[in-house]
Image 1: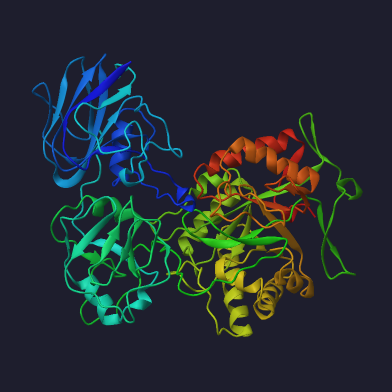
Image 2: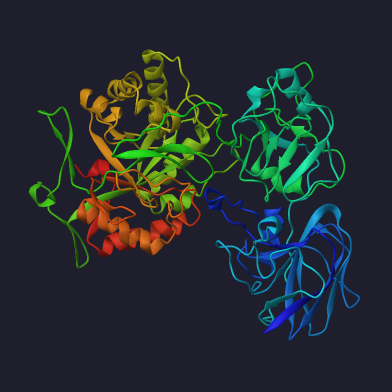
Length: 630
């Protein structure tokens, strides 16, 4: 057992890792590294997981001594003078300290935070799955506070591996990019323009909770208080004094000040590295600052997704068959709780879709896979194609390897023509079914905001346009669109509004009545699909817990989201086999399952999907696109 002993260190230095994604629903902020790219670089140098725990070193100097054996470290982030016993050590490289040797680090240059990763990682007791320190909350390990002289970071003896060096892209001097929202409507256009045209300085009172910006006063239209809502890292609040605060990893989970904008994820680490000095915030859609005579732009060059707007009321569907949930990252969408797979078949007498519960009654013989007889079939679907230009969202390539159906954003709420083509081509190469995922024309809000006032014909045209766009892309790629699944707010509204539901169904029927309509059960979408004589498929979610009434457990409650891949796999197998789900109290609720959604941007989604497919195969359940099973 080796250890790295802290022999001297300044303030603002602590153990940090990738943080606690998903913890905010429990009232805990994610915490984690201020500059995730630099953390990943340091860990990569010594062969660790990219977001393993490392020492985040603030702007002041530090020194560490190896005890109990050699210790290998990787250094990245803000550059410093560094040496081991007088022997110079370069940043963005690894080095090994022999027993008793000391690594000396000077003050940070050109940034605020450096990262020291230790080969084999830092030993500690994870708290909510992370060692990351949040001093205010008393969380973190091995020390739930900033590091002090004399602290010991235990690890394993160095492997003796050859030292490594990496070359990261040169730091850019371009402005920090932002997107406006979610409460930018609380500010007049001239004040928003003042915000992006001004040069700001970071206050000396800034810390890991928030960076306070000093500059001109940004005035609110009607007071500075809103109903408290959730925050994200990079949110820019404007309190009563008109001086913005950029929320950092140790921020509060909610806040009652309007948020004028959000720093895009791609630029957040670069922003966090800025110490005192000018901080231009960019909102120009051409990659530059808006001119003083221009209209205030809505988003940065790479349209990062802002958090949802909370000032208005969101439609809430609360039937015994489904509810509203939020995807990781903040995206709103509909969850459907119907389960058990049969064969999708049109019944003229009912003008809708019925599902035979006994597969043996259909004309199709059971399929086989080796010695396992496949007596049931289920689809695995994922919403993909939600990147925009060079900005990437999720791991589409990995999920397409495991999904059997994908729902592709059609350019209105997310995606663009090139992303659509790439996603369709990936799906075609893997034999994966492709569906349209139309939403409101709202790139800025990611299709999550209701747009009242649209007429039935406007909604029909909106949906038809997007389906047609994907059909054209699919045809050009030699593939075919097989289904339609409404996205976000338009789906939420349609679940409770007859006119919107009918407009979506009528658009699908007008474009191609053979398309499968993916619906939320027991909602007005179902009745609209039946009236339009469309085939329908019902969807459940693999990673969510259920209440006794068939609703999903609120994400505000512990255990609402499931993360254990093996437990999820066993649970979904039972859903399909039994035609039922088991609630958190053990109640059995009869449901249908035609397609199972795995959130592609959930941490561990690929592992969840892989384990689920293996478990379904072992249980004799075939995995195939639902459109081929009728």
